[in-house]
Image 1: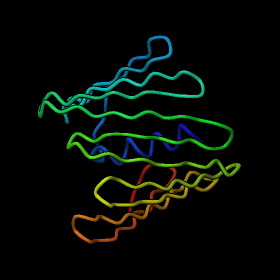
Image 2: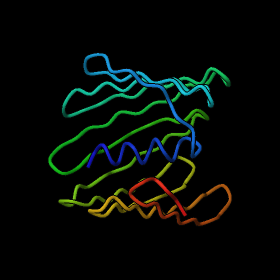
Image 3: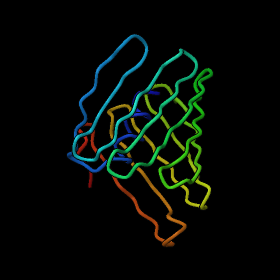
Image 4: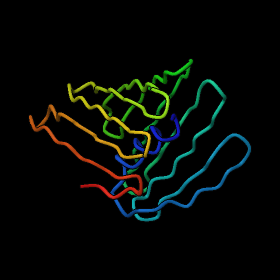
Length: 142
């Protein structure tokens, strides 16, 4: 379930249809996305993981730390614009639920069912808008 949550976070962070080239070395995955200029690495240490990113087009950095215990993952991150965010993901035995918030007051939650379909609801504090996105297990979002 953690992997599904990580994939959801990464897919939200990048534009749909953009692919990254990745390489695994030991417990670390290194990726570079030629379209966006993002390069990032994720190191997995069992009960924790660290992701660090850099965008060569903008010169900005971003990253996150995830801690796992039982059926819960807690992630703390920083965006390329200097905002901080956190999320909690709960493995519900075949499905998962994620709740998150950022330092600007934005919030989100996602539910992924046992078939891999995800409903993502978000509130953007900067614009005051609420948005719902539904994605099927193949990554097609509506």
